Length: 190
Image (cartoon, rainbow, N blue to C red; front, side):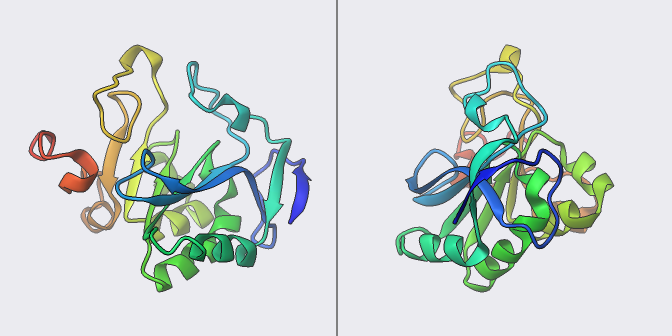
């Protein structure tokens, strides 16, 4: 592992991933017991963000794909991995090799982003490639005025929980309707 990420730009494919943190037992970043990678660096700076320490692109700890895969596999009860932040799509190229390996191993992949699905698709490149490997995307900036503690796996009402395979097939945003993600009470709300 290499310490002290110092670059605020979108990193290249050969760069290791800069993380603010890692947890192997989250129950709040998606359904079930999940591993969560908190990427270092975020350009959004949403007022009221619950994780402002991840905003600076400086700091963090660098990890290689192999190191992260080993850490994730050390949690055999976790079958889901969430990319959070900071902003994971600022490090999309560095996340791609890990996401591909996790897909091959059958993990459910989800990500939180301040971008919208439409913005990520317009970016193309590694951002669109990473998006294509996800099962679920929680998109949109956190809006403090729309904060709600009753929402499942999102902080503000403007954020969407999207089914990414269905969205890519339809060519437009398709809300996730899986009760494990949205709860039975929200299943038909979209």
